[in-house]
Length: 446
Ligand code: NAD
Image (cartoon, rainbow, N blue to C red):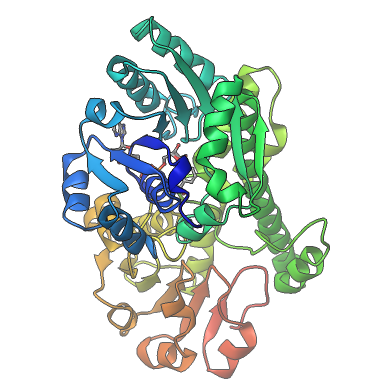
């Protein structure tokens, strides 16, 4: 995207996590002047020293280039960051609230209060975080209460980037969604995304509640595809049939599409689990239940247990004292994010059942250790994980695992048995390599 210096906006992004940092860096790449704010001093110190606190391919280059160009900087001082900003973007976390499953908005509201107290000039305050319908209105009330004389607009601009592909998703979006309630805010947001729309990327302009709901509707629909294909896979395992062929046969229909029809251990990560729960909560509160989403969650909840059952069956009915090489801890490849990762749940349950879990992940070991502690062993490499193990579980489809010849698995394992939650190999090639092989929705190799 070529920089459009003449229409550059001044932007403050509050929250420098996966979304805030990528959005800030990419909007600087598009020519805007961006200050990224976080309350965690260590994060800001790292970024100022030229390091990136998360693993996201290509992000380091975009950050470096824009810091050098003087378009991107980092601070913990929110008041200083918003001093020149026409747009203040809220990109803080909205995790699940334990009590009721709703999105926990305390960070969004705290940021809103801080912004309101700091602003002394007109600005558009935009939520990039995923927030339930009606949150924009609540933010408006908070700001009016904190700073009654402030002239401001609110807007909703949900983010659709995928971890692991975030730069490309942000720079070449399928669509940009902007919800506003005034022409002034719409103009400011359209100028912000001009470098993208000038290239032909679509901007969908809506009211605020619609923009907020679009994000949940999109994520819960994708989660529905995942739970749907996982149910089909389970049925295949009972009645015969190959889920890969079924996905292909279904997905080739353009009305259905191939994406998100790969069976697996259930969706995880920092978005789908919490966004499906929040959607159900939104429906309940509105007395208009999201019944389909409730079923999607129920299917997904049962999956880690099913996966553990597969591993126990592969171990001959009992995993006690057996060494399980667990390959993959992140919820998907090309990220270090292990939040709500099924691999972590499975590791925990296998350890509970008495297995010696020896885990390895190319990027997720640090964060996994924070969750799993001493419950599992951490192998320094894939080879070290496999060495003389009684069983191998492939939980995340990192290329390091799928590109490794099956002969290497065979050589390293004490018992040549793979349980593959991601269908990265085929039963035929596993059989040819002399390995037992259990995957999802396909015939097993004993
Ligand atoms: P994250 O936890 O990685 O980042 C949030 C950051 O905000 C943290 O660094 C935290 O320290 C900081 N923060 C919290 N309160 C603050 C405050 N008052 N002032 C300054 N900084 C503050 O979260 P994330 O994954 O980037 O997600 C952020 C939002 O974006 C969520 O609503 C999420 O649902 C949504 N989202 C995430 C993704 C994704 O792939 N991660 C994709 C689309 C949308």
